[in-house]
Image (tube, rainbow, N blue to C red):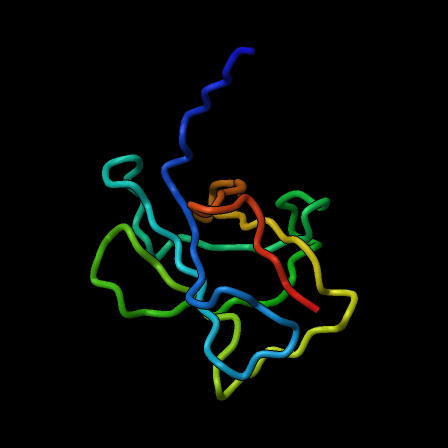
Length: 126
C-alpha cells in the first residue's frame, strides 16, 4: 500500500469546548491558528464561514454568524464567537450534524476549507 502526502494549508481551527450542542449558553469560540510564515495576510482581514459538510464553502449555506473577537496579540491567531452568555446559541434540530470550517484570508480571496488538528469536521450535537 502506498501513501499520499498533501501539503498543509498553513491554517488550523480549534474550539474551546469539546462538544457543541444546538443549545449553548456558555461561550463557544472558534480559533484559527496560522503556522508562522505560511502567509502574510493580516488577521483582521480573515473571515470564517461554517457550512454543512456537503455544501462546500459557498456563501449561501453558512450555519450562522460568527462574531469576530479580539484578544490575541499574536499575528497568527484569531478567534470568533458562536455563542456567549449574552447571546446563547439556539439552533433547530435540523442544524445538528457535521460542518466544514472555511477561511478567507482577504476580501479579494475565496473561502477555502481548513481542518482542525484532530478532525476535518466541526460537529453540532443534537
